[in-house]
Length: 427
Image 1 (cartoon, helix red, strand yellow):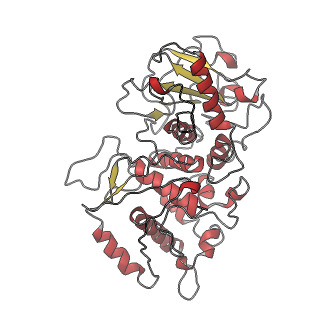
Image 2 (cartoon, rainbow, N blue to C red):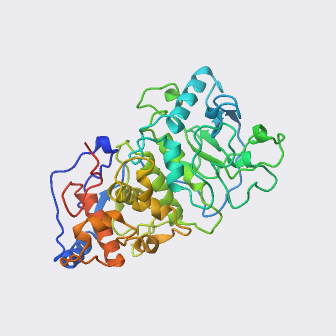
Image 3 (cartoon, helix red, strand yellow):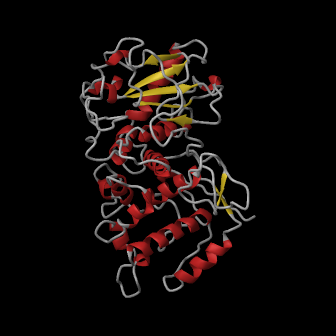
């Protein structure tokens, strides 16, 4: 089998292979057919760094909550300190020693990475991670952008919001933060690395927002993800679990996005794609290789029963790798007319516009945005036009963009046109 390494990095870490494959407009259709036949027996390495297995259901939690002891922890004083506003950690009791000074120092640094260190997002270098991910992926009219100064704000960050403001049996504070369960890697959750809402639920989850211990818990603003090894808890180095390239930060971004959708029947694989977008917005600098994915797997495959044996070759498992790679390709290559990597500049990105649709389900929603009016990058690129200069139809553009992404999985090379790499923002 022919395979090639797919290595996608943050803009300042991009590397490219030395082989170029250029698809000319006149030969596009013939080459599309040739490649479609050539890759049937091929695989490409997965996008490095994305979440391996998310346990999020198509709707609100369908699995019974798991009883376990977790220790709640906020950094700072709730309602008085901005650092205490957006995240409440729940630390697994399987880590011996509960909330030791080492654990608290690690959680403080992790929060700093999540929400108070600018420059880690490849799409908005003037933003904090949480700010960039939230602003990019929440959908109107279900909230405003992240608020940067008021520790008592209870509406700018809305997690687990389903059209109820305030939520039934609760108040706005119950949706204005993320209850973040970090579970010990020794817990056996059937291979699940994270989920929204959290499989774990504690009786005191909502005490700090005005509820009695053991009373009704509003759990839709909770997420969970696998924590570090016990031996790595105190590693505060930039490459450790509290740093911007860790799988824990990627897991936070991925699961947070699941909680940002309104209750509008948007489910299935598109939810996982939206979370792949959150990964790309936050930036993925972890380049460790992961599983391979066959070209016969559909891009939005979401078969939760796993890979089927032949002859059912087009049935697939959960195709996280392809979704993460496709999200990164669109995020980094289609920056719109304003290509500045800032909060303001990202608002005309193609992927940003897709995420803001009332119903972003499936590729038809993306196809309809591929006009010169909605896609500034499309208007600028000659390969998305006929030789006469007339724009290709949105359908033809979608086919060509999808094809070039497939090519980029093997080539990942910077060329003028078409775009067959994942990152042209490298210095």
